[in-house]
Image 1 (cartoon, rainbow, N blue to C red):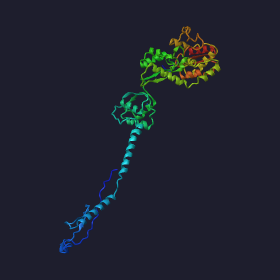
Image 2 (cartoon, helix red, strand yellow; image 1 turned 90 degrees about the horizontal axis):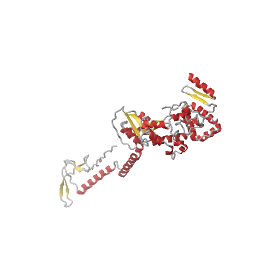
Image 3 (cartoon, rainbow, N blue to C red; image 1 turned 90 degrees about the vertical axis):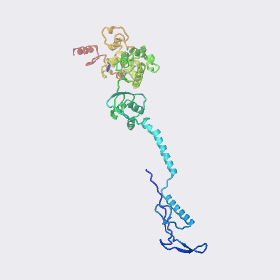
Length: 441
C-alpha cells in the first residue's frame, strides 16, 4: 500500500653655517692707524678693522656696525668657504635614495593590483559593497538557479530583501568554506533573519513546496499524472500521452523490456524539486527515470536472480523482478511483511499455483476489488491466469524491490494482512481460520 497519498615623512632643515672668526686688529673705538700706501709710499690713515659677526641664522658672515674694507678676493673667499661648509653639513644629514623609493612604490602597486584583481574575487566573487535597509520579519520566496556561484546567491538574497549586505554574506560563506555547499532551488525565507540559520538552510536544500512534487510508493502512472496536474497544472492526459517507453528508451536502455509501451513501475517514488526550471511532462518523466536508474545501480540483480533460480526453480528477468515488487508493494503494509509476502509468491510460482492477488485486479478497477471483479477476464486477473501480470501495477519502493530480490525462506502459501492483523499460513485451512479470527475480533 502506498506510504502516503543553500609614516609621516619628517621635515629636513639646513644646519647652521660655520662662524668665521676674523682676527680683530683693533677694539671698537680705537684710533685710526697710519700706514704707508704700498703703491705710493705715502702715509694713509686707515680705520680700525671691525670684528666680523656671524648671525645664528645666516649662511654667510657680515660685518658688524658697517662695512669693513676687505679686498674683493678676501670677501669672495670668505663667501665660498661659508657656502661649502653649509653644503657639506646638509649633505651630512639623512639622504633619500630616489631610485630605491620608486622601485618600492612600484612593487607595492603591483602586489596591490594582483591582490585586488585575482585574489579578492576568490573570496567574494564579483560582489561590490552593497548595503540596504530591509524590513525584518517578512516572508519571501527566493529561487537559486542551478549552478549559481556564491556571489550570485548573495545577489538573489539581496534583491529579495533577505540580507542587507552582500559582502557580509560572502565573508561568512568563505569563513565557513561553504561556497560549494550552497544548494539551488526555491526557498521560503524570512527577511532580516540571523546568518547562521540562513546558511544552514541554504546548505540543507530547498524548503519550499511550491516547485516540489511528491510521488508516494505504490502510485500508478495514472495517479502520478493526476498529482502532476494538481501541482503544476499540466494536463493529466498530456502527461499520460507523454509517458510512453518508446519516447525514452534511447536514453534509458532498461526500458527496452517494458511491455505495452508502459512506464509503469519505472517512475520512481520520491519527492522531486523543480525549482528554477520550466516544468513540463517530459522534464518530470526524465527526472523519475533518472532516479530509477540511480536507485537500481545499488542492487545486484544478476546474483539475486541466480539465487532465486537455484532456490525456487523460477527464472526471473529484471523486469519481472520489478513487476513482482509492485505486487508486494500493494499487498504488504510494513517492511517486515515484504520479504514474507515475497516468499509466498515465490512458493506459489515454484509449485505452479496462481498468485491470486487482489492487488493485480485492483490495477484494473482502480480501486476496491469485488467477487465479481475476480471473475473478469483480464491478463491482470491472477485468479484466472498463472504467473505474473504483463506489467508492473505501480511504482514499488526500494524495500519492495529488495524483498523481491531476497525473499524470506518459508513454507507459506497464504497471508491475511490488515492494519491490525499480519497472518501468514502454510495451509488453506490455517488461512481460513486467520480470516475468521480477524473478522470476529
